[in-house]
Image (tube, rainbow, N blue to C red):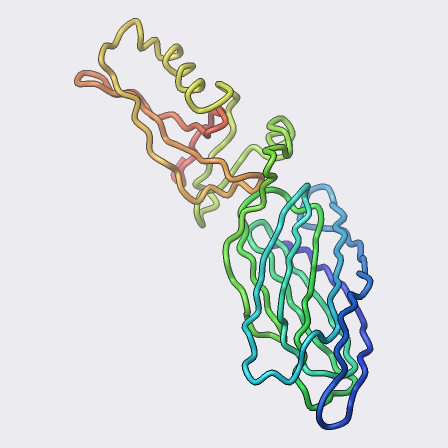
Length: 265
């Protein structure tokens, strides 16, 4: 699987007090910005990343709090905020390295020390990556090789504005299901503006209102469709009554119709 490797580097010099402590600093370092070309897409995409953090904001605590991690996504930029990252006082270099594929974003924070003092330092870090497509990702964050966060996140614009339907299906028309490469949905056209209007279109195509009475619209969700543009839902849909059972159709909640290719097709 092709992956994107992004490295941001930020160097901070902190005052060291021998043996016992370190000075408290609250200023935020200027962010570093790194541009890289992504090789995970047919057309290379440039990602800009930024890394910034506070200097030592507290030290000498007996009870060290756990890191607090939050994310924000807006206009293609994923912002990762880490509070109370625990490091040693000293002169150090902070490195943030990111690895991205279609389903996973991994961020590694590493601290390289030139010298260390006998104290614990808590800092806050802010790391951003742009040109992240809307979709669901597993976000894994490590610090010095230890996993401190592993959760699924959804990157979607709150306004609902994102890449257009036309651009999505111009770029990609096949979407695999689960871990199989041959079980997939293939885009077949737009049948409506939403799920209900697409179902109405299917009624007309099947001429149900002319030939069948008392039929029900049945649907079942299709899980684990690898659609990395937004968090839309997919359904298998069919019509039935006592005397009639239609073939299945496959729709999403935006009104798009798909063919379903199985592994033995």
